[in-house]
Amino acid sequence: MNSNTIGSNSTKNELLPKVKNTIAIASGKGGVGKSTVAVNLAVALAKAGASVGLLDADIYGPSIPLMLGINERPKIYKSAETMKMLPLENFGIKIMSIGFLVDNTAPVIWRGPMASGALKQFVTDVDWDELDYLIFDMPPGTGDIQLTLCQTIPLTGAVIVTTPQKVSLSDARKALNMFTRVNVPLLGVVENMSYFIAPDTGNVYDIFGTGGGEKLASETSTPFLGKIPIDPRIRVGGDKGIPIVFDLPDSNEAKIISQIAKNLAEQVNIRNINSSSNPKIEIILGDGD
Ligand SMILES: Nc1ncnc2c1ncn2[C@@H]1O[C@H](COP(=O)(O)OP(=O)(O)OP(=O)(O)O)[C@@H](O)[C@H]1O
Ligand SMILES: [Mg+2]
Image (cartoon, rainbow, N blue to C red; front, side):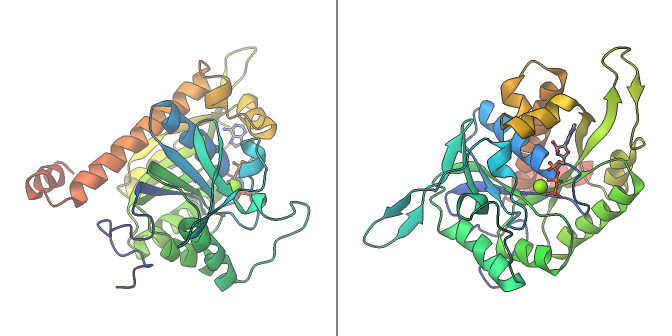
């Protein structure tokens, strides 16, 4: 097998030998909150004590620099044998984005092979060092380019973000199928913009419908990691470059997202135990399904 191809969940992460787990945050439909979820999960995992990196794989519309309030040219580290870029750091996580390297007012025009080449460089030419989790914020969609990206980066698994809306769910299902097709394990579904709690009355409004994410998860035997409400403070956190889990850790929304991060870590552990060489544990977990 080509070392750059994702084969199975037991594939050794040859491109990133010091990174324990690599997780793609993806969706079929655009604008459902992948970057918001990726940023907040990364910061929540770091707050829980893990070493975390975040790679903005959305090279067409990188939003991580804005969402994490950081945009500088990364330093280059040169030694006799290698030349590596050092990721930037903020909120306790290591960050790399194409937005740090290009003029953010100019559109970035990539052809498929260039796009996956650029992404691969972010994996190989960035000094990520030792990480428990490297999170990839993926571009929306399930076309050829996304597929190529999936095959370029060695992934422990993928998280699918969807809203409860039908059109988002149907695209989320396509994303699920894409990962399954390239043998990337599905770590879970996150339903974002699930409901809105009116601050004055406390009434709950299901703006985009209800229960769709859970249904999708159960129909596809994918773990359901949780629901995130629509809250202006989540949007403001993105716009001002301070994720809500960092800025307002005691808010209900930050607690919900931190719980989703814990659920994700648990799924990663289960996945790692399942794909380890311990047949006993594998049998026990297999029976429980
Ligand atoms: N739970 C939420 N409550 C309020 N606003 C949200 C929530 N989730 C995301 N948003 C807002 O919705 C918009 C889209 O979110 P985001 O950029 O994270 O989506 P995306 O899926 O990464 O988009 P793209 O497909 O363009 O990469 C942003 O303005 C973000 O702040
Ligand atoms: Mg995005």
